[in-house]
Length: 179
Image 1 (cartoon, rainbow, N blue to C red):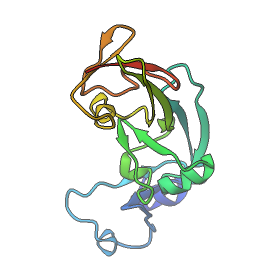
Image 2 (cartoon, rainbow, N blue to C red):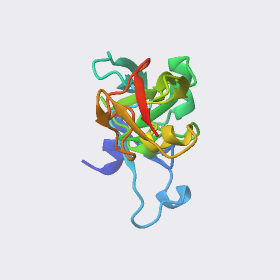
Image 3 (cartoon, one colour):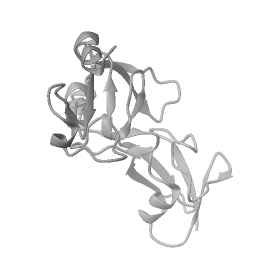
């Protein structure tokens, strides 16, 4: 089967740099160079389905969305109807980039990073309320509190490099501050 026949009969198309390629134009007209990556979209008419889960709840139910590989992250956020941060493979997604830019493919799961409140209890008994995100590191949280300190959660000292989600810190959790 010739490439032209495959292109027109299969309903598939190629994507380069966020644009769907026309089967009648040469690759050079799209500025495709040696070692460029083309994405093959096997079902452009049907789009694809991805899932979005809310962090940090490990058992949270995924919400499914039908998207196109050329949709921007901003398009996806509009579908979610919430201007929160989206993460994929631990990376924060930028609104203007496309799903293809992040190699998001059929049945991928993205994570919705929602702000949450946690409480930090000082040894003096004073409690501080902080607005944080599950992807914040323990070091980020310490940066919101003045002075040198260590934070514990259920008796375990928290590692500076770990995220709140990795430490199972959820909305409403209380961390203990040892100055």
